[in-house]
Amino acid sequence: MTAVDRQHERVLSTLNADGSRRWLRPKPSRGRFWRKRRAVAWLLIGLFTLLPYLKINGRPVILLDVARREFSLFGGLFYPTDTLLLALFVVGVFLTVFLLTALFGRVWCGWACPQTVYMEFVYRPIERLFGGEPGRTRKRGAWRTPARYAAYLLVSMFLAHTFLAYFVGVEELARWVRRSPAEHPASFLIMASVTALMMFDFCFFREQTCIVACPYGRFQSVLLDRRSLIVAYDPRRGEPRGRAKRAANNVPLPVVAENGTPRERTAGDCVDCFKCVATCPTGIDIRDGLQMECIHCTQCIDACDEVMERLGRPRGLIRYGSQAGVEGERVRRLRPRVVIYPVLLAAVITGIFVALSRIEAADVTVLRGPGLPFNVLPTGEVSNQAIVRVRNRTQAEVGYEVSVPGVEGARVVAVENPLRVAAGALRSEAVSIVMPVEAATQRRTEITVRVTGTDGFTAETPFRFFGTGRAEGGTP
Ligand code: SF4
Ligand code: SF4
Image (cartoon, rainbow, N blue to C red; front, side, top):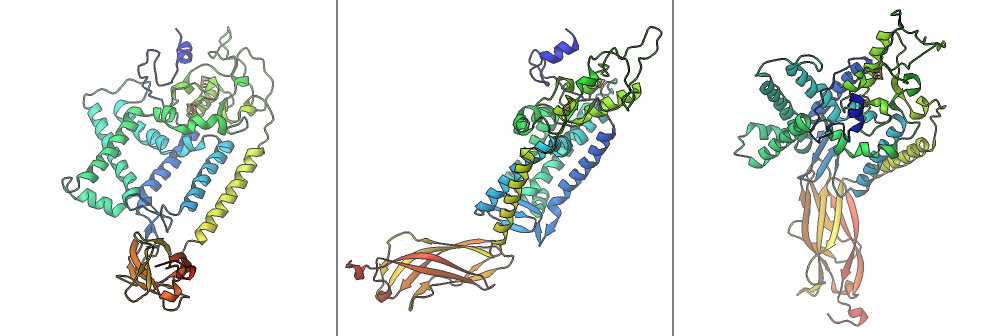
């Protein structure tokens, strides 16, 4: 069976025909795209490492504190109760992904996804450092494998700590690191599990994360169209493929000039050298057309360009293009989806700004308390139980006074009024709303509960007060 047959018989590029794992050791092609990707990758790694340390308005730029259920994003503090914002944000992310994919294909996967960035520019270089370049004799030495795994472990630990910093904050993380694991077994377990997960992903599962686990690749058939930018092989130029042939007198076949001067050809430009396959980190052959496994990493472009240059042929047999383009159709970039997505995205972004502008210094909820609908006090006054819940969104402690305006003689009885609420904290207190008997003769009276903060914040919340119903013929 030839290499091509074997290639086509595969169900998955990481599996052999007998179902065993096919370990990929892609040969890096250090061309122009690789150099650009490496610069982007190190920029992103630096950003990912530094972001947890950066602060805006005294808050981390990004802190997703799931345990406390609060999220710091670019100087703002958000809570799970900010449902409208959350919904708009999620819709915005999806629309951005749709738009970017329609325009630039899987540019995220190839250039910015942490899986690709760390795999191709951290873990695989470590593998090559200890094991040697793919395609060459493996470096010998029994110490190399343990040393390689020790390096993987160090990097994975660092990566796991950086990742966790986004969820617990750098101060808390520093406490975890300084204390003995016996003092904080739960957090130590979290740290160890995330490190183990990184090791599993980057040392064992590897490219299979993109091929079988990531849902994004599976959606590409609906997100891409024939005019989206993809990494594509040009079959019109490359086929019929074949080894670089020389004429009988050992003179190379004539070459097509860049300006397209016609030449007589007996074969396409693809010399079937398999360099594009050997360099592919997902183990596929780009010449089979657009495939789900292709993460658009451009390694095959660099590999093929090098071959073409060596043969004196124009670069770009594999290139950034579109399916329609490589099939010789005229490519119009403007199409319905690249108009509809930006319009929807603009609407969502406007919605986010409007929702942000409406966020107040505190969130107030007034709920009916448990127990009897009303009580008649020995003084003859009528009381209702209520729960006042205040979330202080500022960065300083604030006192919140609860009152009932507009009803003469009405008062609020609470253990503490004003309620002191610490910066960023949520506090719920049971209060009694007491009304003079003459104001509570209806079964239901719509009143307003006012919460006034010492920082100038005011919120008024409607509350249905249950009275004796005497005015309607009821009995207390
Ligand atoms: S690297 Fe280029 S020439 Fe070589 S097999 Fe791939 S497409 Fe053909
Ligand atoms: S086919 Fe090319 S662009 Fe796609 S994953 Fe393989 S090397 Fe990267």
